Amino acid sequence: MRRVILAVTGTIAGLVALLSFKSHVPSVPVAATTGGSGGSSSSSSSSSSSGGQTTTVPGEFPQGSLAGQLPAGETAVDGKAADTAYGPVQIQLIERNTKIVKVAVLVQPANTLHDIQIGAFAFPKLISETLAAQNAKIDAVSGASYTSAGYIASLQSALDQSA
Amino acid sequence: MPGGGVLSGSLGSSGSGRYRHAEHVMGTVVSFDVPARAREPRGPAGQIGGPLGEAVRWLHWVDATFSPYRDDSDVSRFGRGALPLADCAPELAEVLEGCAVISARSGGYFTTMPGGTFDPSGYVKGWAIERAAAIFTAAGSAEHSVNGGGDVQFVGDRLWRVGIADPLRPGRLALVVAGRDFAVATSGVAERGAHIIDPYTGQPPVGLASITVVGATLAETDAFATAAFAMGSAARDWVESLDGYEAFAITAAGAIWQTSGFGAYLG
Image 1 (cartoon, chains in turn brown, red):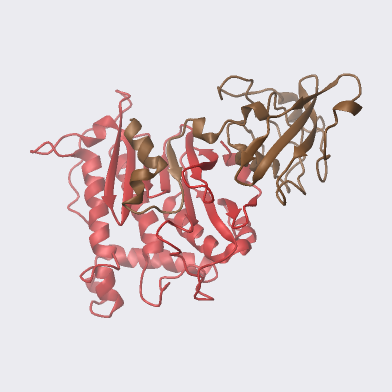
Image 2 (tube, chains in turn red, yellow):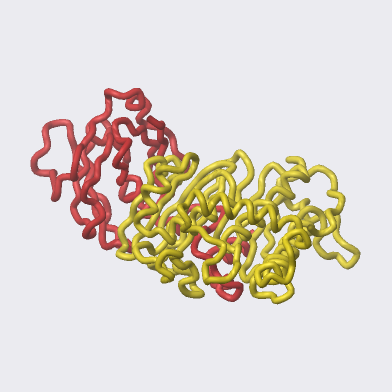
């Protein structure tokens, strides 16, 4: 099983992508940003990388808030609703000892988040970090080919002019 | 091959200055992110020299030699039977070989006859960009990227971050992909219209808005992305079967999927 280090620096689409692991779930150590504006990442879940310590939530996420039904020691953190290309997404994280033990979906677009499986994601302030990728530092843009004329309005053009 | 000039001195790590250059060529724009010294020494009129100058000349030579839109290109003349392969630039044989490999590995979804006439462009661009990047490596650069209209070769052991354009919301990014020494290619419904044809139906493929493929080198990665887009939803299992390649797709309906190893590239 490939070890995967993830940093929370994508758009919500990146987040959805990252939540969409289906075939290699059991142990997903996660590097989480800890607030601020998309700063450096550090693994906050090293103990979970050796397997056995992660909590796998099979199948779909619970739908709706879990805030009213949590055992002592667990807290719910509601993410900010993100309006994505795929519809609005809002996720609630249930933390225990700074580790995410459950994820609930408050709002989801149709046909994207169902059949999600997820390992233990340690995402402090996950949704507040949804950071549009627009705000993330990137080196280049990949996309369907633009024409020579279309380049002018492209994101790559903006990058090229920034240097 | 343009007269392979002698490269200037090493582009070692001394001096952290970077230089970006955008070159209009091959019907698109090729963007370079290279060490500032890669444009030295300048030519007599101050024009760009060094490996950057060589790379730019290489791309224009490729354009003139391989463009199917130029009647006098080797590709056009070879395609209409006016020029035997032996009399074409030797690089054409190399390209044909690369195309044959991709075509076989994609079950024919990649083809050099997309519109019924000979057109290896689906391979040539990625191949040319990969070669352009290699020019800087040969000149001693340890970190550079060359982006051929959205298909990028990254060289260097740093973590390169590339935004993937959202095909459903122009001007926005869908996600960020990160990797070292790797290539990223995205195929989709381009602004110039549906330019990829499903060779089995003769129609533009359906199912995907765009698909991004990551791999080590751009020639294969870009051609695989083209083939994968032509496949539509079947591309998922196909890319999954390719060793060393991963894919992320956005469907026409706005849903997304990815191959099982793609998570390693999430930025």
